Image (cartoon, rainbow, N blue to C red; front, side, top):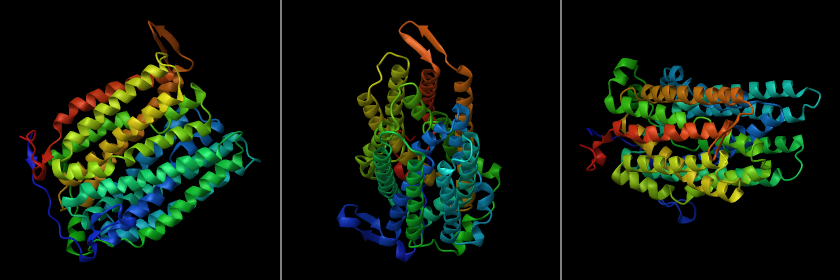
Length: 450
């Protein structure tokens, strides 16, 4: 493989460290003010794991949503993230912090409106489902616009030599917030579920959003001078896609998006409708997905800083492919529905996805040049989000068209969800082979990078 040179960036003095973190548990080479990004993402995770996760999926299901509608809910986030591309043109007019604050403040309004929906008993379920979809659409629209600021902001205050460490700690805080949210949801959703319980969970999401804004204000801004002007420089799509490491990274992320698009909704639907698990059990088992990464993320962050991203990406996909194959075996009747098996799969799957996300984000940051980086990051997000947005809608349509399918082929009982798990398992194998197109940055020149 070829190698490309890494980026050396000037860092504002207020961003330099080191800082040991709370109770000395998270020593990092950057400042306490930059560390506020991690606290922001901790509380932001409390927010989005509810408004974009299992609680909202189960609420929509209770309101009569079919698989296609669930796929649409899953698609809102990536499709609206495509708004980063037009938003990137206007980043030069604002500081990164002020742009993010505006968007994150406005989106919180629509979490609050969604929290009211379960209590509108005087409306039919169809009307309440429509109101919920409208709130989710507007939430994701504003979120998608404001996320244009984050990657340029982070690369402006965190030097390339410590980004793996930064991502590892940041994802640890994200998964920690997600874990606490799922455990709280599991406790609240025990027994018979009244609509007001969904409203309480969604109000927790509003609270997480509000606290995250307080920490967002404390993060140092990237210099809004020559560096910002350079990063906001208009760059044509043709020029961006001519950068081979960048183009290959986008193509690979787009391919793996066909595997992960839909994972927030269809496994939940399978556990509820086919395995007949209770909502409380689903929430409790989902928490394992966020607990497992806490055990490995900081070590992985140091590893990708030292060795690069490719080894971690390939190992993560291999683990995840094995997990998907076992999901297929369970949904096809080869393995009985058992919460202990689901717990193990969520632990391993959480590690696989977390490892991939960390290493792939690190790679993307490494191959994006400084000049016009706002547009490079926006184009990356737009193209990959388009794939991840279309995939759940496509799978939802397929699952609805299969209806009550139950074919017996030898030991296999091919049902709606077993076909889904088999499909994404095969796609994960294709992604593993396709990882050969990724180009390792020169700063992490390993024996594989030729």
